[in-house]
Image (cartoon, rainbow, N blue to C red; front, side, top):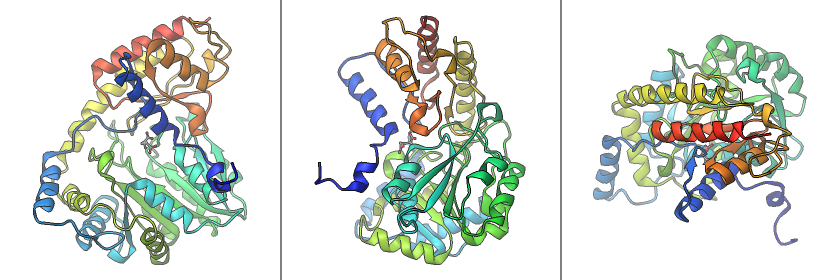
Amino acid sequence: MGFISDSINRIQPSPTIAISSKARQLKAAGRDIISLSAGEPDFDTPENIKEAAIRAIEAGKSKYTDVDGIPELKAAIVTKFARDNGLDYKTTQVSVGTGGKQVIYNALMTTLNPGDEVVLAAPCWVSYADIVLLADAKPVFAETRPEDGYKLRPEVLEKAITPKTKWFIFNSPSNPTGAAYSKEHIKTITDVLVRHKQVWVLSDDIYEHLIFDGFSFATPAAVEPRLFERTLTMNGLSKAYCMTGWRIGYAAGPEPLIKAMRKLQSQSTSNPCSITQWAAVEALNGPQDFIAQNNAMFVDRRDLVVSMLNQSNGLQCPQPSGAFYVYPSCAGAIGKKSASGIMIANDEDFATALLEEEGVAVVHGAAFAGSPAFRVSYATSKEHLEEACRRIQRFCANLS
Ligand code: GLU
């Protein structure tokens, strides 16, 4: 189809979004579906944040704003980085967009030239590689292993870097594995990056607050100050503040990059929703105690899911310390046949047959460049999780 551009033909629709909407459609059509596919908390947005949005509507905050954020939100973001991460940014180094995805998109599209390379620690979030491809650059996957809890080893990163590497994208806690990197582990990674001066770091910290078991969060620009000048530290409100549909993401980094990102945004979406920006000011400046309460529920759910998945034939599920995902390997199921006779040749077949036969939606590992495995989002009730895991156990028991 010559009419559609080569760059669009290079990419895929987001599989996490595709599978989540397929699950929604099947449910609406009357099927008994449990969706463990969406990367979004099931909790409602806290009341104080909703009230701030209502106040903004009533006060008529409905006009265009500065392209990359109102001054009040930029100030709240600067305070957040200082308070939570020990990072010292100026408001001129902050960019706010319509979701973390837009911020990442802006950063990559404003910096990548054809042939440039971007190193990703695989398995990784579905959209990194496709945005890189859209820019006619090349994603390079540095593989992690289940036995390392899916954490990148510095020697693997070292091997993946070439003179053409422009960015390394770092994501802790990780989507899809939940892997959370300690300060000490990050230091082994930043030691490699310090030596390769052409490489910039995009740290996707969106799961920062979703950490368990006393884990202490760290981010590369704070761990290694020598990288501060070539790091974009990105974050957002979707996950910890239960605001996925509101669409706010932000980042801070060197001014020339922030300026280029603003230029691109001024020619695409302009400012993020004015009402959402006021809600975001309240989210960042207001009480934070609900996060720990939500985390206590997430830990409970994680423990249930990890234990039930590890009791399923052919599955092996590491227990991560962050995000709301687990990433079981389904290597033991490959090459088998499902109850209804579907041949499981790869993890996509596994996920398809599981949805078909048991009505459980998960995202196949190939979507994250990490096979054979699948991602389970446990951001749903314990009742649902228990029933879904029972169905997964039955599905696995029936493989022959
Ligand atoms: N980040 C979430 C996920 O991985 C939301 C969907 C998306 O943008 O990929 O499921």
